[in-house]
Image (cartoon, rainbow, N blue to C red; front, side, top):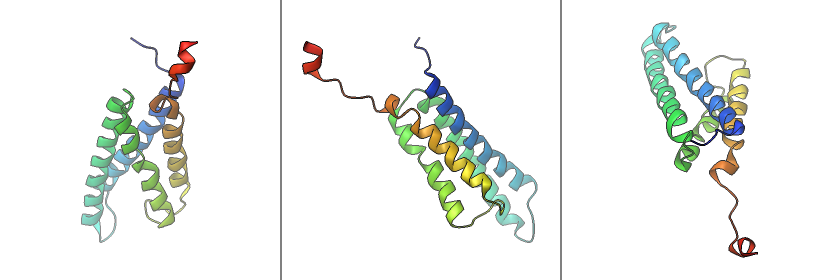
Length: 128
């Protein structure tokens, strides 16, 4: 069994936090919908639960196995939060959480970039 690189551990923990936050928001939206648009909030909450749950599964299984497709798929997180920030979308109006999740997801994706894309080994260099 190979040792887990510290950068990889930090990376998947960052992405797992983003996944769990989205899942938690979904649960809150389903349980405590607000206003006259309660049905819409519940529907958005259910979608967020699914989004957070499947994101967490991708983080905890294929991403931790360093499957490259998972790294590509999880780029949806910073895009998702950037769209929320630029579009002034809910939840909240302070947008600090959106900036936090953008930074957290980018950290999770960029820290282990060499793990997912190792430097090519040169045959001429190995022959020396």
